[in-house]
Image (cartoon, rainbow, N blue to C red; front, side):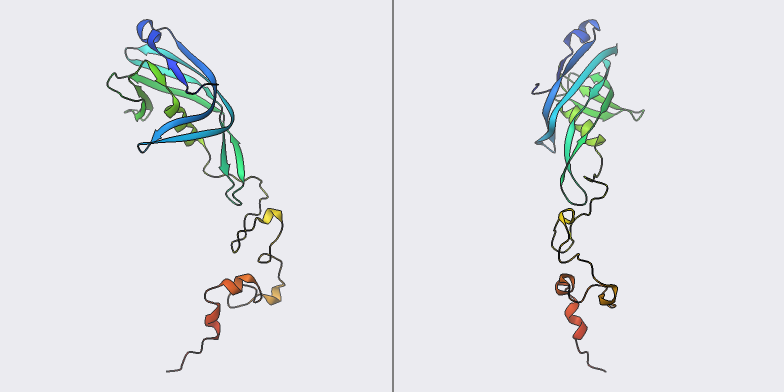
Length: 200
């Protein structure tokens, strides 16, 4: 298992010979906001990358990456494994002054991976592609019932006292909640009902 996804481009830069790298990753360390972040995968994530010369200082990276990340269910906060199948395709440009690889947007709107070292660490690149390709939210099950908004109980494990069925006739018309339920007790405005306001 690789510690970092490295690809060696020395031969490609000297003789236009294609470069290749493959392996598996259980995490990626990358920089964000000046701090080192770690993106952990729930199982080994295979990657396969090739880089070929386009002439001059420009190259093209292509390949695949299949990480499985862990996210929280948007309704009940349970952990959800999310497998991703990423197809890679990115222009690259060698600039000796670049201290660390980074993505920049070209005039065409396409992103270009800028790098300054012939031994290229693709950790930041793969982390950014993974994060951008991840869904905004997931649910562990389409029928997920979520959490009780009063006590936080996971309703997939069964109802709680706040969410128990209440006959329609017992619903308070003014507040729209059961008179005897925990909702009524915890409503900060429930006490205002009996407040006597002097007539002017």
